[in-house]
Image 1: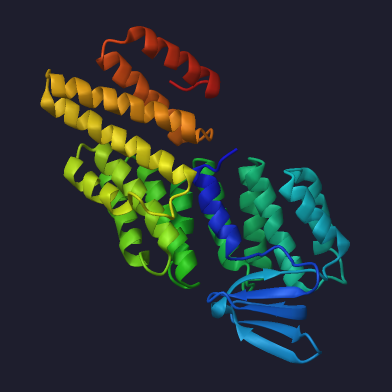
Image 2: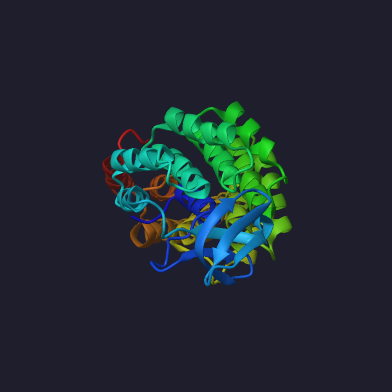
Length: 345
């Protein structure tokens, strides 16, 4: 199954904190792509990563320069937890990670990673209250951990998923810029998501645009998704010219993944529909509605991922079909929507 927006966002959270191990040595990957192999990583704080280099020499690197860590010399339960998590056996993964946390032989970085991934497993399993508790526990037990920014983002994501919008806004706001550029960018994206969920579409669009403008060079994937979200909001608000400018900025971008192309297709169809409405009852308007219908149907066929974006493509296609007088097609699409998304309307 292709990734939804939430999976994309949380995938970025995971990516900057942990890297699967190579099988031979612990690994420290820096922001510039340099990879450092280590016999072991003994300390991972917000300030520094301390490790034993291959050959036995002790060394350190600034945590701010580090993108991710990978462990090979952790207790067997850690790798078992990883395998269970990746296979979506979350209860087993949590059980294994808990054993690592309680293992006196495990190093502090591995214990912190395990504590963090307990929260991840609860979040992925839909246990949002338990996820918030797990992430908050890491913050309480080790506020200097390298994994703290990821845990804070995970906590905010869990609150958002649970529908606690004030809590999510507070959690994203608390991250600020204290933990570096990537956590700040993801917190900004999350805060814009909160605003959208609160129905503050214009404010949310501005927030997404602010993230995109600030991270265009340093974090292009975050900037790209932010522009797409802003474009969708501008289109929904009927701000056709503003939405079109944002669409033009992302069309043809090689960084667009399938989820991004789904969003882009929906926005393009929304703009066609808005232009058709403005054109009134004319042959040109009918052509634009047909183009919008085919754009929505193309998105459903090519990029179906079970996400809210796919459901939105169905709704857009249904509206276009009805506007074109194609009631039979609209009814067929409504049936497919109900089948794919039980309870959706």
